[in-house]
Length: 305
Image (cartoon, rainbow, N blue to C red; front, side, top):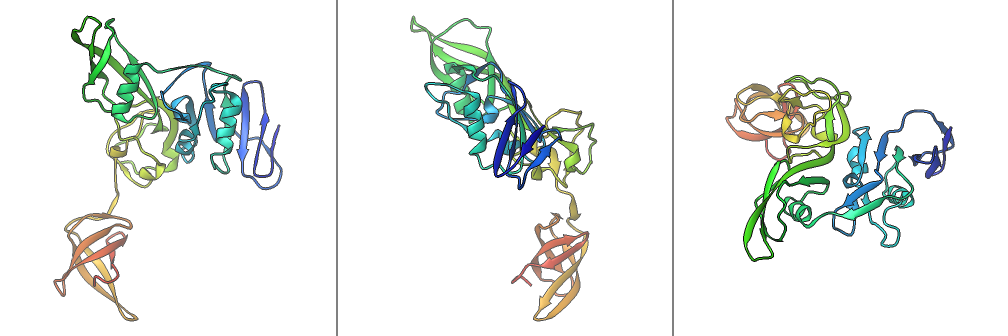
């Protein structure tokens, strides 16, 4: 049994697994499964930078509400110790993360090496902060001259190099982009309006660059594709659920002093809940900005009626 108390507390459950609970008032037993699980292997490859995101050196899974907050925790390796369990714990505890239980699975100390120059250059050009695995069947080696345009999701790339004899060649690579991201919890159909129960969070291969930074980018929006369990949900896979569509007649409310005036207007834009759109008041023929507040209902933006 593990107990949580004070602002930050943790208890070792085994030699490899720790359960952390951050910010809970009063002692209470923890029986439920952890919100998030972090797994770090015995051997890892570190990006060549002074600090890395936790999601770049681990596999993360769990509650999508906390996923990206955990993945973005900064870890700064210590020159003398490298990356240790104590360092990871310290990074989590000082991250400001609140009210989340975390299962950490890792050895006390891990072995690491810095990524090769080719990976480092591809990472730099693509501005990729997560895991990156590259392989090449070309045995040639040399100084990097140029990397062909590359962005996250592209599975092949060429690097222009100069060999020791001065000749210039291209070294070809296969790229696997791996990131902590939001995935489908179950089979999702085209047109489904997503809820938190539809979304999972885990580390997986990503074939596009539009990785979402928060589940809020999906919630209440309509899916534009079909997804199988475990497949990533990208930001461009969803669209707003429009309560007002361009060309619709809508109920239009505006205020004049203490008086609320109702009229019929025509929408000049489509809009989801809370969005500002243009409408034309069919009585006055004036075009004004209005906020969508319901299905077919808008209210004049202050100062525009």
